[in-house]
Image (tube, rainbow, N blue to C red):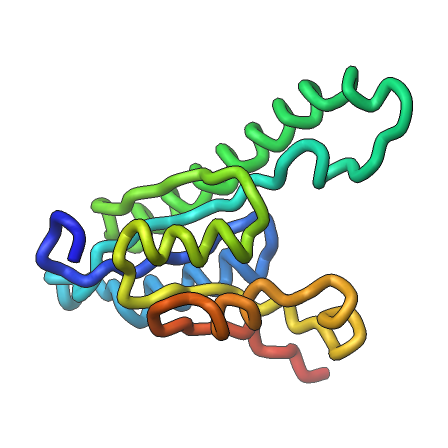
Amino acid sequence: MAMSDKPVMLVAVDDSEQSFYALEWTLDHFFTPFAPNFPFKLILVNSKPTPTSAIGFAGPGGSEVLPFVDTDLKKISARVIEKAKEMCHSKSVPDVSAEIVEGDARNVLCEAVESHHASMLVVGSHGYGAIKRAVLGSVSDYCAHHAHCSVMIVKKPKIKH
C-alpha cells in the first residue's frame, strides 16, 4: 500500500463531460459525507498529450508552434485538475491528491496504477460505437485489460426523449 493505510483509488480526469460525470458518480458513491472515514485515498490523474501528438505531423515550421501548443496543453490540464479538485471540495472531500502526467492516457493511467499501488481505477466512458472505438481506441477498454487493479468504467446514462 501507499503511505496511507487506506487503499488508493485513482480517478482519470480529462476535459470531457464523461470524465467529470465519472468523478461525480465516484464521489457520490464512495465518498459520502455521511461516512467521513472514506474507504479510499483519492488521487486524480490527468494525462496531458505531448505537443507533437496534439498537432500531428506539422510539416515545415511545425517546431516553432510546439512551445505554444505545449503551453496551451499545460493550461488545459491545470484547469481540468482545478475543476476536479473544486468538485471534490464541494462534495466535502478535502483530502485529494492530483497529478498531471504527459503521455498517452492508456499508458499514463496503467503506470499510475503501478506507481501508486492502486486498488481501483475509475474512468469515464465516451460511449463510442464499435467503428469509432476501433479507429480511435478506447482508453477504458485498454485499462480494463491492462491495469493491474479493478477498473470501474462509469457510463453517463443516455437521456431518453
